[in-house]
Length: 249
Image (cartoon, rainbow, N blue to C red; front, side, top):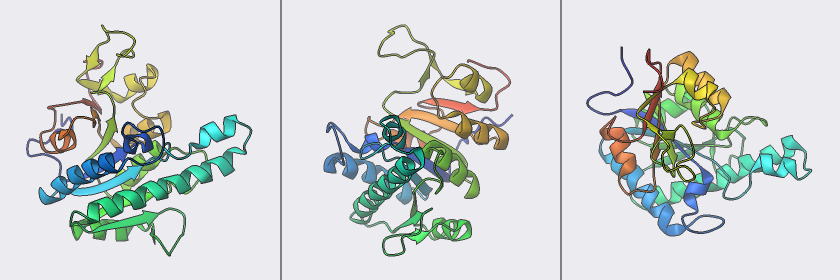
C-alpha cells in the first residue's frame, strides 16, 4: 500500500508550525533570526517547485486554553489566540517576501486591510500560481486548535502531507528528554497515535487525517535544512503517521 512517501518528494504540502517555533531562544514573541531561517527554508521549497501552504500557531503571543484556565471566557480567549496567529502569519509573510517569493495571507476571520478572506478555490489558485499561502486565524471558530485547522486546510487544498514541525526528531513512546531509553517510531498507525496519546497532534486533527488518509510527518525543525529534507527526501527523517497495517513500527 502507499505509505505516503513518494520517491520524488512531495509536490504540495501543508507545513504546520507552532507559534513557539518563531521564538528561537527568546521567551516571547518573534525572534528575527529564527524567522529569517524558517523563511529561507520555505523559499528553498518554493525554488524546488513545491507548492507550500503554512499554518502557524499563536502560542508565542497568546494561547487561548491558558487564558481560559485563568478565568477568561474560553471563546474570547480562543479568538485572541486566532489574532495571534494572524500576527505570526504577517511576520512570516514579510520574511518570505524579503527573500523574493510572493505570498498571500488568507484569514478565516475577515480583516480585509491586512489579509484576504479564506476561500478554498482562491487558495488553490494561489498555490498553482506559485505563491506561498499562509492560513491565519485557525478555522475561525473557538474550541478548535491550529492542529485541527492545519488538517482541515490540508484536505481542502489537496495537500499530499502535513508536515508537523516540532523540537524533537519524531514521535516517541515516552518523553525522550525525561527517558533516555524512549523509542522513536519510524512509522506509526493513526489509531495507535490516538490510543496511546502520543501527542502527534490533537485528537480531532488526527481523526480528520485518519478519515481522509492524509499522512502526517512529525520532524525536528530546529536543525537547519530539515524542512527541505522532510519534503524532498521523504522517509529520511522524522516519524510518518499513516494508515499502516502494521502498528508501532
